[in-house]
Amino acid sequence: MSDFSKFRTAVSGFNRTDVVNYIESTSIEHQKALRKLTDERDKLAAENARLQVELAGLQKRLEQAQADNDALSGQVNALAQEGSDLAEQLKKAEEAQQELLTRPDPQPSEPVPQPEEPETENEPDEPVQEPSLTEKELTAYRRAEQTERNAAVRARRIYAQLSNLCEDARTRYMDSGEEIAALAADLSTGLSRLQDAFAEVQVIFDDAQNAFDDMQLPETAAEETAE
Image 1 (cartoon, one colour):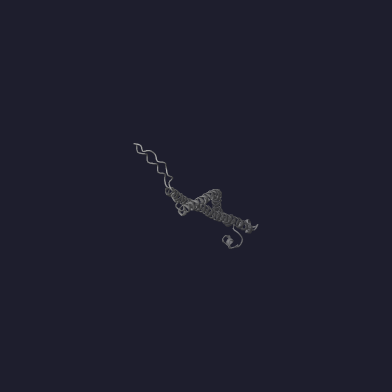
Image 2 (image 1 turned 90 degrees about the horizontal axis):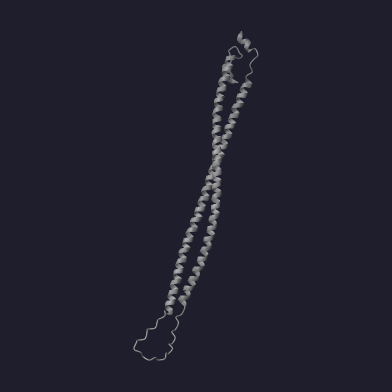
């Protein structure tokens, strides 16, 4: 290896002190790199654990959002049925109103002659005048018109409630899905970095092992040094 040239002597062979120094410096460098990678591995492992917990929380939120969506769907169906009932009532009110408008005015019948009564000193009481048929029709018309207005107001309110419920459910569902997608991407990135860190640690161990295997010290190194 070219790195060994710095502790080879001019005569050839190895100098034991240079070999020891080289091993120590290489070991220190490897320890620093290993410590750095170990710290990064621990940091990534902690980040991975945090992401796992956050992912579990988001999955629960998604399940809750789905349950809320099902509940909102039930409310939407109930409101839709109520709107259908109101539409039917409105239709009946319009039919009744149209019937009142097209009904012909009844002809007044001839009064039945009453027997003459002897006059008395006291003036006779005025007969109570019953409401005419026209007044009854007007009252019924006003009642039908009020029913129509109430049904229209209620229908608009139901439509607004349905729109708000659907929009709220869609927003919550979309937000939960986006958060889970982002977290899944972060989790995948963290796992990839953790795998890279483990791979770098393995490379350092392999390099150190190869360096020590390549250091084939001659058996006569001590004797040559003594001479």
